Length: 636
Image 1 (cartoon, rainbow, N blue to C red):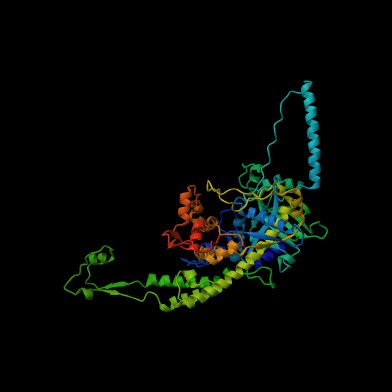
Image 2: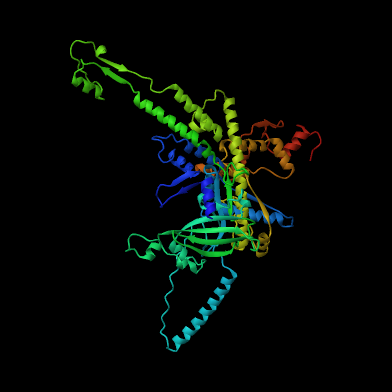
């Protein structure tokens, strides 16, 4: 462990705080966070030009998930494989939409780390009423059954003693429940996805990939009191003592509520374990190290509980380097040049030269910022000869050119355009701007593919945990969108058929692959999509398309088209535009609407006008075929 920590600090970097709220000590990748927040590290420059902040704020959002949605596909053929995959997709997407689980927020934190630090981690597991990863074993189940029997026998004895008068009827006081530390995003009896700081993870230094590592460790900072209350840990936890404090008036139990210890979870591969992985947990203080737990990892994940998101990864080193780390020397150069430019501006301001003819009160007037100040000069000397303004070249052009060249190098490394980074562009033509944008799109697409593949692995492990421990029959699945009530205009709630035990068991035993839908990666251009949708609807309204659908016994639902079209305006609070369509009760109004906008045309010689497209009645057909004198054959 010590060698692994030393190797990580040397190859990846550190971000340590002696106490919560204290300034962190950073090295290597940890310095990128300083540059993001301050523009430089620990006040290296008096007035840094923070270019890292706009770079990160322009790149990272393109890697985020706006509306994550996954599709499950079965790995083996069966009669119910399609339906089972559909239910699995809906179960996962239901959790992704749940705001209390905060899966999207957790994923975004790791995506931020993946770009800024080149490493991002999440942990997948299951939480019970006792906390995260605290799962009952067979021994605990038997013990719970024995305790229940003992409690029943005790109640019978107490009742007999109370009835016979040998014991007063006083109900026992219930024991106080032990406080359990549970994060808000971790729900009881539910799988979880938890963000893990890359500076709290240590990987076997002999490996070059996390999949090749023999062990992976995580540091968890907990209070000493929380460690002693954790029901999983062995009796060795009671031997942990708080570090000495200067104030002897503070009780030891009170110190335990605030003093923290480092709890290390070491996950290592062991072929004898049922899942192939065992977990060794120990607590380390300044003076003590105690083993708290050593057991098999209960999760059947086919790998670690952790999923690693990497940036610029190659197979020659374990810890990759971030793009921000690459451009840091250029950022330092920009800051130093910017400092020099500001120093020139301060030193080489316009100066005022005057001779001895200017009286002392005139000197004071020259220093006054008041408009219209009078400067007194002795004698008859000309003012131009007594006072003169000396102007100097404040900023050298070559220094400004250097700044522009360094900015161009930063743009080259990050894949951004000058317009995105500075708000300005040097493109002289639309073609130049399009070429720059195309290069930027290529970089962003590659990064999005990396994040998408990582998120797919996360969801695969999340589903395996969900299928292994959660009762699927207790979950109700609601459809994304229901039809509107024709009378009220309110969207009706529609539910999928419930999961029975047979289907739940089949889902738990099956294996599925997951794909992230392409539209989930970034927010689309709604203006373009609206225009495309409207063009599509106009094409559907063409007579040829309408007649072709009619031959198949189908038609285009205008009401459904308006409902789908209104979804593009939900971000502006106009998501219920479909309510504009209401049922027509009056038949006269309905007939008027059917003939609205049609041009009248002349029919037979009886002087009666008929609207174009209106279905003729039988009398008109007979009259048109027989002529004015009734000659000719009747068509009916």
